[in-house]
Amino acid sequence: MALKEARNAFATTVDAWSKVEIFRFGPINEDHRFDRLFYWPDPKSIGLKQVQDALAHRDPQIEDEASFRCSFANSVATNVDRIAKNVIEGWREGSAYEKAFLTPSAGDPAYHAPKEVTLELYKAFATGIELVRDQKLAKALGSSPSVARPKLAPFWRSGLTFPNMIGNLDGVRLLFAERGFAQVVELDSPGVENSILFDLDHAIDVLEGINQPFAEAVTDEDTRAKLEALRVGLKSASATAGDIIARSAGLSFGFNAMDGD
Image (cartoon, rainbow, N blue to C red; front, side, top):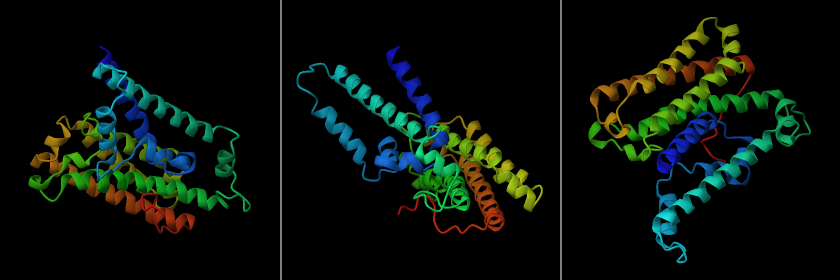
């Protein structure tokens, strides 16, 4: 029962995280919080090695291995909770960052003008699509079933890879539909906003409709075809939205949040 509850709690945490994973600015970037919460991709398996080392060299005063594993997992969960609360506090109403984001000014070190805030939000939109399309799907799919690498995807051990992608796209859709971008596109090109929302909704529907484990999905020809078609739709949505928003808001996209400094 305890293991089942822990797994359910983990799935709930992943679901909540996935919807905000696309936002890589502000308090989440302070004190390396993003990487401390979600260090992915981890091509050299540094995180896994550190966990394995901690489990292998457990406190000798704790004789029972199962008890140590539970204690270690509880410590990790407590740290995640602490980091999340710090991020929430950084965004609280009246905080310095919240004020800078909502009322940017020339003298503020974070945002000097509304256009910079708009660019930050658009980067979250574009990054969310790229995250699913190129980082999580393309690398795991490979060029053919024989070279698919499902273990490159996040949360493959827990079977939460597809829910994670769905959450990412849910966040992207919410940002586009309810935070002004859909209205910007509609004013420029009426009807196009619905096309972008259709592509996002279709991608979410496709991912929700896959009931295979991720490792099987990326090697199954029929499912791979669906995923590749999904990737085409996402590319179209991102490119179309980017062109219109850049033109309408006078923005210049030189990089996104996944490019690093």
